Image (cartoon, rainbow, N blue to C red; front, side, top):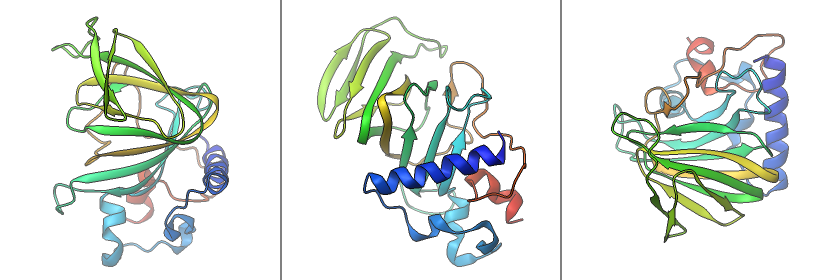
Length: 223
């Protein structure tokens, strides 16, 4: 992805968060030049990959297949006792996050505002394919039965609990959607099983200076 597109998407997300009344921590607005390598007091931000995150899943077409996130809090099993994570996401209308599951992470996906989030679900087989068996999920604590490939349309205030090994993909409907995630510790480097191979972190074409650093920028920028 071009850095210019990433910058524009982050600016748009900041405006959307403000419009929805959702506030990020003050350091989210930090310019790249103001980050300092080796700052012990801020090591949790760097080591636990808190902050701006954006991916096109290797599609090259972010508007059709992509996701913009901000990780607000996250544990790191190698360095602390925090066992939970929280993210906020912007899902555009018709923009797909492709079919995947997590081996370790259980998560709640919560629609915080905007349009509706459409979630499609399958159980996984022992060989990590799609199962054609029906499934059960909890929506706001209430158990629902769905066929394989069943879809749920969640409006503002609604949430779904996704167990480990449960395939899911989602997209926005009826406009841009503000989505929250509360989960066990998140590790996007090794806990995502995508049904179709694709990249999790984008290769960036540096056609202009970064507006905000991505979590995937930290290693190179702060080395």
